[in-house]
Amino acid sequence: MRYFRLFATYLRLGVLGELEYRANFWINLLQSLLELGVALGGLAVVFTHTDNLGGWQPDELLALVGVYFLIGGLIRTLIRPSMSKFMEDVRQGTLDFTLTKPADAQVLVSIQRVEIWRMVDVLIAIPVLSTALLRLGAQLGPAETLTFAVTLLSGSLIIYSFLLMLSTCAFWFVRVENIQVIFMSMWQAGRWPVSIYPAWLRAVLTFLVPVAFATTVPASAVSGRITTATLFGSIALAAALLLVSRWFWRLGIRFYSGASA
Amino acid sequence: MAESPVIQIDELSKIYTVTEREAGLVAAMRSLVKRKTRDVRAVDGISFSVSEGEIVGFLGPNGAGKTTTLKMLSGLLYPTSGRATVLGFRPWERNRDYLRRMTLVMGQRNQLVWDIPVIDTFELNRAVYRIPEAEYTRTVGVLTELLELAPLLRKPTRNLSLGERMKCEIAAALLHRPWVLFLDEPTIGLDVTMQRRIRQFIAEYNQRTGATVLLTSHYMADVEALCKRVIVIHHGKLLYDGDLSGLADRFAPFKTVEVELQNGAGGRPLDRYGEVLVQSEGRITLRVPKVETATVTGRLLAELDVVDLTVQDPPIEDVIEQVFSQPDGATSHLPGTVADAPFDSQKQ
Image (cartoon, rainbow over all chains, first blue to last red):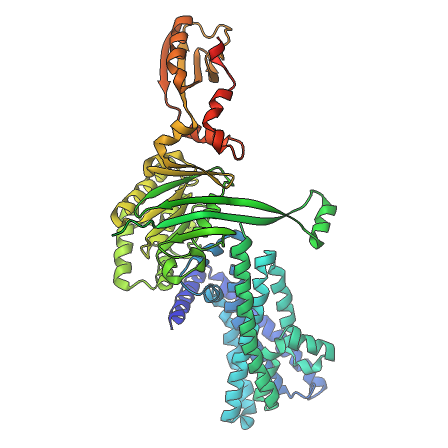
């Protein structure tokens, strides 16, 4: 509850801060619309040749694009800006201010910057996803909806934990911004269902960089193709990664307190 | 109330392992794989205690270990060995009850959010520290009055001057009304007027709240105005802990003798009287051991055409410089160094 209030404060500050740079909104909107155009155009091209891609129907792929934008929007709005700020703080020593606050440092670090204009991705995702869901409507019962919500949540948590762990490396290596760039380019692969990729890449996108859990898995929940094993696998992985990333974070803090100047 | 110290440090040490590499590309490449490390004793077994309500100046040249000590006390660093308690807490356990009662201000670093008005950063700290509305409003009111913040609060941080920003930084760090303040060079880079404002404020805050303050500064004016007591560290070791006035006696048992000569020095060697600090036209400034001041001035007056002569205590800056020019581990024989000074007037 308390952290919720804190988050609300950061959110408000994000709005205030970005109101100062209004042009950003239009640039981001343009960028996101372009990206959406490319995504939808890609789908259109593919489906003029075939009506089935790796077992996925057009509407299911539309749902995937929606999920891709939704979670991508969350990453770009909250996780990535906060993690960038965190890495900057490590480099400049201003992390000290966060660590002397009487609140959980991991939470503070994770919600500390909200790039509100990036929400356009989420705004774009909603109509795309709604359209897809409506067209798939017949197959969507309460169970599927619940499964969808659960996989969406665990997918977000998986990506969050993963990015947190990557960023935590800043404690040891200080300059690790490039890791984020690498992640974001891997993330782009999530625009397509992982089943279309060769086995090795599928394995990479599932286990090494768990993009699949945040995109393909929730999207397969709406198209009713998700297996129970995948569902529980996703939940278990989310829980495990949350714990591991927490542990890793603490390790990083301990290192920082032990060695930094 | 029992007089148990607010800050108590025993044999506190911090050793950093730093990586080092030789200059050059090859060495740089090699260091990507394997790094040479070296231990640096940043803080080397220091002990002291500070009582409630004291303002203590923590002095030392760059790299002496001041900031490292402050960081250990504010819970940011684990010590390598030794003990420390502040308000009864071990700082590096980062107990929330402790963090809520202390604050850290670093003059070189900023906690205000860059793009938003100052008051919004205050709001953020209010949420983080969970300060009740009424108390928050009252504290902001008091700080605004004391630091004259009213015209600044609505401005984004990036539009403030360095001095204005520092005032706001300090206010942001005090919203939760901490009992212990660690101020690491709070006046650095500020102009003289602003330094004085900050100084007055710290004194005022200390008087009003009885908060304990540990302050580092390179400006002796800060120290002279605020701290009765100073702790001097050098190369991680404690050199001096006591009254500011005692510092000069202990480390710089010299007087500064300034003479104005009728016809200039006229080629006469002046270093027979003392170490020549400044010599311009007819004015000469000499450093003379305190015990010899009377003899030397007598001789100056007798042997030279003196127009004017003044004897002064050396400025505190010079005292400090004198302290820090001591070689590593020289603590024990410091007062004795007088005899090794580069002149020996006794032989004359």
